[in-house]
Length: 387
Image (cartoon, rainbow, N blue to C red; front, side, top):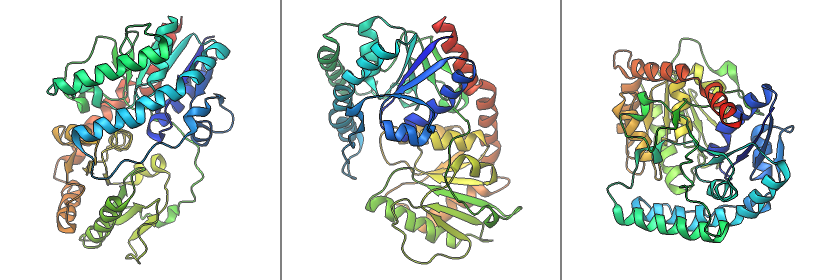
């Protein structure tokens, strides 16, 4: 029996993939614990998991201005979010390692305190790459930005680990769990040979949703619109545009619009259902298309079920993931801030078309995900390292 410690940031999309993997390891008889945002992990993973204290990780992350894009958004992400988060989590991660004495640390790519502290202490550790964007070396064409980021990482290593250790905290030399496959990632050169393309982490998750399943009609197309945790005026505009677009679709397919912030306060047609949250994994097998912001988890969960996409990336890794979807032939891309109802209607119609090829390519990628093994393959890799 081995002991595995997950280090995760306070971000739903980065915690969720570890839940199924942790459950798989526990089912094999191992001891598993998390360090991160206690309440959020508990909400997502359930009441019985072991969570070690990391008070600093519970602070709310700063909101980014909606107009930040490109290098400015990247600078904000690292300077205002990820580096301060690493500084804040370092003591909690160190104490968790001392208390739990893990055989292996699994550190999320954006919880870099995990990799830095494990590297300093000489522990075996693995990177959890819940999005494939970093695997594409997005800064290759921006050497000055890459050098700036290297300086940031060097400085935070000096503060957290006294300058000890040499590994890039985003890519453990012991191994990188990448929740994707070549069929979606494309022919990019990977950072090193121990990057394992395992496919997405698909497993049962706790759900308190009271979704009205009888509303979905067998044989009638169904579309989901979700922007993940994105909100604000730009999100409100997109959801409103989506309602207009779905209202004019021929045949009035069933449409579910996820509106967690309550931006949509006007009546919608009977074939459009607005919900604050939905059990997404349970809903996907009943869907024919997904309209989303190109978040990696939503994209991969949709493709796992062979559901084609309309992607409207906002920032961060989303334009890269959207590009992968389009290049793979599994969806259509629209402009998040400028798409019109007519354009969105056309995009949804194209992915719903039975002869458009989008569903076929989505199913092809989904088969590659299932063949890759997901949490079972990941658990095999982790057991091998721990032993």
